[in-house]
Length: 204
Image (cartoon, rainbow, N blue to C red; front, side):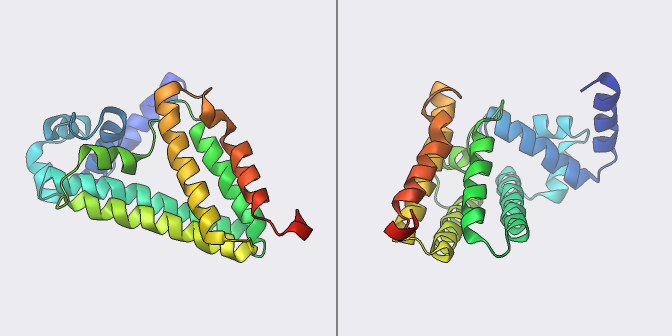
């Protein structure tokens, strides 16, 4: 990105309404540095506003954290909707596309793992408003995989969905601990092997 593009991005961000600027700043800071490490002062400063404005849009930092995670959940909804559009009558192709997309996510430089898992570690309090967002999101992702595996006609679709779900969860943690060249580099290959092992014998 050159200086003109960077300046354009900054100008565009400044034209956003205050609430959107605050969310964009919080999302970037929370994901890169962690929720506990980032205070409301830093968020307000990054958004080019102040704490009074922040609290006018969000009742508390906890509510801002919950909304930050809802933003990722909406992106996931869009991703699944796009899969349906791209492969409307081919659930098997849709499953393999999901696998490749997740592999691509793992290989991104600057990847700091799953925002929901990171938040769950940082927020052990069961009453925190973000906890419900985390649990709802993770349950929805697993359920979507179950439905997709079922649509493909695989043997034990629920078992395969859990295997793929746990493989991806573990791979994102592996990227954080041992880097892109660790076991996560074989994520797609391992996922393909899992899928193949659940195919009816006559279709393998």
